Length: 401
Image (cartoon, rainbow, N blue to C red; front, side):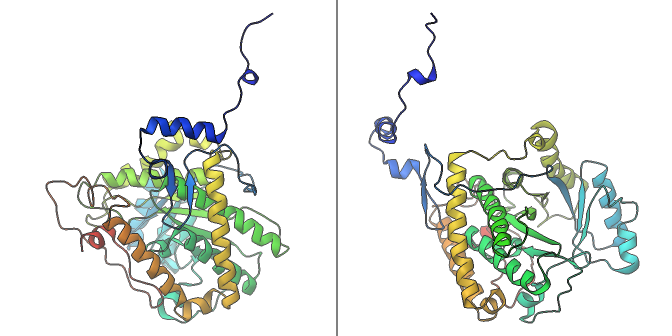
């Protein structure tokens, strides 16, 4: 007879037994302060969990790994084309032109790119933001159903929008849009991804779950949304600038773990240096390393089954859907924005976020903690203003003010 022990021979720990041992190891320190994660969005989750949520997130399986999206900021079509081709030869798999090239300029910018292999997005041309004019000028342009649409949550996060608000505002926009032009329209969600890995991963999973659920409620076929993740630069600090590479890496990892189709990363020094090949190469290699060295492309659903992430996904989804219902009951996203409710709600969360950094409840390395002895003036990015949104939130100057 074998004397080897089996897992079944050990009695399972109860939550109470585990907590008692942990409190003993903490030696008088507070369990709540050290092992309960308190979200700035108003809910808390224990760092240790031994069960899945009652309502488990139902995600459609992904069909392929994410694509590395090169963000091309050149305003000249020939230079943009040169940058795009160089990036595609060095690891990039798709291109996003921030300049709206039209006509001959579009032909020049995309010359030599096989779009069947490497998707090309031209902002304001091949892909359009249906709510840009509304938020920018307070007046809605005519929306063409034949054009690929992008629901831009990244812009909202740049102005202080919370994670829960971003999910809700994007879904409210998408539902209103598709009620107008049809749910069979080509649609992308562009989400802003910060450096809070667990929260951002769970947020993307919540978007996927809620949009599939919304389609089912509309008697449409439940499918995975097409999600583009772009890292947030609101915390990019000029002081100890290479820390921004770590922030960008965490954002990319969160987007990948959450299950997006494209990940675009802004170079860490774009706010104070001209575009250059060194910064672009290092930024591109963040994803090349994650894909080719970490082999993250071999697992399409790496977050599935994590008790913490599953519970966090459910918590985010529930709170976000409550806000979606509030917006719909108010009359829809457009009315919510035109009546000033959107800007008001974002302003509240924006101030809460800034206050959290000023009190060091949240940490921005080398800005409000572990600062360098040599501090240079921060360069506040010059982003355009929107009539129905707060101004761009640049944390380094907000914290210092």
